[in-house]
Length: 620
Image (cartoon, rainbow, N blue to C red):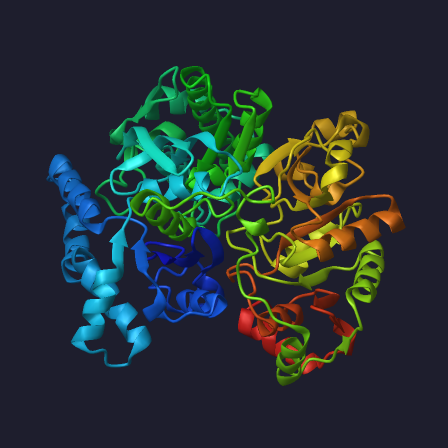
C-alpha cells in the first residue's frame, strides 16, 4: 500500500511517501524551489518522493491532504460573522481567493496531480486522481505524525499550533494502530497565535520568526508576564485557557495585535529592521515564560488524568519550542517524551499519510529496530560521489575526491580542531527545520569566537542567535544536564556545572546583548546566555559518518561536542543539492566544504565566483 501525504497552501508545503506504513521519503518544497517557507503545491517534493520510492504517481494508492478545506472555510465564515462588522476589509480580501481556489481545493489538487502525469490530462486521468484523494483533519495529521513514528505502543499525544480547521490544541490517546481525539481547545484561543502575536510585536515574521523570539528570551527578564496573564490570557490550573480578543486582531484583521495591545505594552510594534532593545528582550522572555507555564500545567494535568500511560508525544508548531520541551522533560510528569522532528505544518504531510494508513485503512503497526520510525529524519535526497563530482565540476568547483570516509573524517576533524568553519553535506537531507548532520555548518564548540564568526560571516543574521551542540549520545550526560536521547535537537538542557565558567561580578552587572560575547563554559560556542544549549545527541546507527567525525574530534581534543547549525544563509532555505552547497560556500566566509568524499578549500576556488554568489545572496 503506497500512500502520498501532502501539506500545502499556507506555509512550509511538503510531501511524504509511505509504503505499508514504512516511511520512505519526505521533504519540504522550499528545499527544491529555494523559496523559503514555500506554500505552493509541492510538485518538486512529490516528484522526489516518487523517485525515491521508485514508483509513478499512477501507482500510488492514496493521496492524502493534511487538512479539510471546507471545515476551515466554515471556521472563516463563522469567525467573520461573530466579529462583524469588525474585519470587513480582511473579509473582502480573503473571500475572492477562497471562492476562486480554496473552496474547490479537491478539484485544484486533482488538476495539479494530473498535470504531473500528463501536460494536458484527460478526463479519465483526472477522475483516477480524484478517486485517490483523501482528507485528514489538521490536528489529526499532527497527532498521527507524533504517535505513529514514535517508539511507543501507547501514549498521550498533545498537539499545539496556531490553528487548523477549528482546533488550536488537541489531546489524543494513541494505542497500537488507534488514535482517538479526547479533547480540544478551539480558535481563536490559541497558544501558538499568542506567541505569534509577540513575534509580530517584537518585529519578526509570523510563522518563521518564532524561534528568534525563543532565542532572544534569555537576554531579557519576564517583566511583562503578569500583564500578559492579567490582560491577554486566562489560564486555568489544568492548562486550558482563553484569550481576550480585545487585544488581538488575527481573527479578522490584517495584523496580529490591536491598539489596546500597544497601550498595555508601551507603544507600537517594533519595525523589522529597527534595533532590538531591552524592551523586545523582556517581551520575548515574558511570552516564553507564559508559554512554558501553560504547557507545564497542561502536561501535569494530562499525567494526572491518564495515570496509567507513561509516554507523551508532541507535535504542532508549539512543539518546536525546545526550551519548553526541556523544562517539561525535567518535571518527570511522563517517563518518556518523543517530539516529531517536523512538528510544524510540513510534518502534516507525513501525519496525513500515516493517518490514512492506520486510521482509514486499519494498517498493521510494526515494531522498528531503531529508537523510532523516523530514520533519524534523514528522509530527503541523497547523492553518490560520482554524481557529486559531476555537479561540482559543472559548477566550477575545485576539489579533491578522497578514497574513503575515514580519510574525509580525519581531514575534517583536524580542520575543526583548527577552528575552521566547515560546510558538511552528507547522506540524505533532513526532514524538518533542523540540520542534523546531513546539511550542516559545523565548527569547534570550544572556540570563544565561533558563535560570532558563524553569525556574522556565514549566516549573516542577528548576533544574539544561539547555535546547537552535536554530542555523542554516550557522552551527553558528561556535558549537559540530560541523560536521554535528543536526536532531533528539540530539547534544551543546562550545561553541566563542572563545565561552566562563572561570570565575574562586573560581568553580572551587564544587561541584554552586552552579555553575548562572554565565554560561559568550556564549550562557549554552544552555551547560551542562560547557560543552556539545544542538544542534539548523535547516534552511530542513524548517522555513522557524523558519529565518526565527532568521535575523531574527541580523540584529537578530548571534547565530544561540536557546533551544528543549518547549512544556509539568512533568508535562504537549507541547501538541498551539491550546487546549493557550493553556492553557499562561495557566498560566505566558510573555510572548507565537504560534500560526500569531496573536499573543497576556499582559497583554492575562483574568487570571481565568490563575488558572484555574494552578489546573488545580496550579502555585501
